[in-house]
Length: 389
Image (cartoon, rainbow, N blue to C red):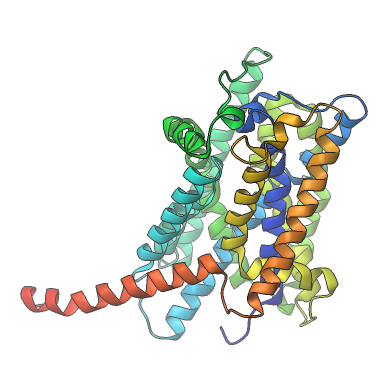
């Protein structure tokens, strides 16, 4: 691209911090993801409704926003390749494979709710879809949305029909009692369970990637997309947001799932339109925009780093903070932890970019891709010579 969309860096930065706002409650749960899913160890008294409200504010919306921005980024890569005369998707599968490895490392070492592995698979699929005619892309988008709605309906029905229970406690509790390597082994033993969400949301991820690419073509980040942005804000923030809160706050487990995977992605479209509209006419980011832009430019590094820091603070192999919390302290401490890690990400990303062009993981990823791409490029002539092609 000749110019860089200022709004895209801001959007990525907000999405990264938004995923932290969602996941921080998992880290501060004494039983980690298991306890969070079962609704154990929640707040009590006046803190209970505050906890529910704070969790609902972030639930699913920033996951959707991050997924859409990945789709926009993929479409920008396609534009760049075509402008340079390179075939598309070419060797994009190398990029996808490297991202999958990043996600695999992040999963085993730091967090069992990693999204990078899913994005890697989705990116490879959508990269090939973007090489097709627009009509076929929209057909694929429709199939993905229909499949996701069907799966979501089945899951919501199952949750609504299931008997309620208090849930069992982990004994032993690896989040509290295991070493770092012990928790790695726990994730390896339960990989099927912990990776189920990635498989379940694959149709949704494909749809949001394709939607991001379509929105980029329609000018959602540019002045010409003003009418489109207004419509997205009406649907996302005016209609989907109130429905999302109603489902999440009063619908039980089924409502929470319908919100996280149903209405929240639509809310994310409204957030995208609102934030993009602030910069569509060339306006430079203000104070808060400048604060999150470095996070957006180092999104991969910041995503992994926030998981590493939160795990070190909360789990037993580190400072073990989660085990010291009770129903009266979990909310204020979780909020303070989120603010502290967010401030650390803002400071660290800005300091890093004053000396380097890319984040550390982005640099490693770029160097690995360049090396692999060059190796495959050198191998191609010898293959052609032997086959006569």
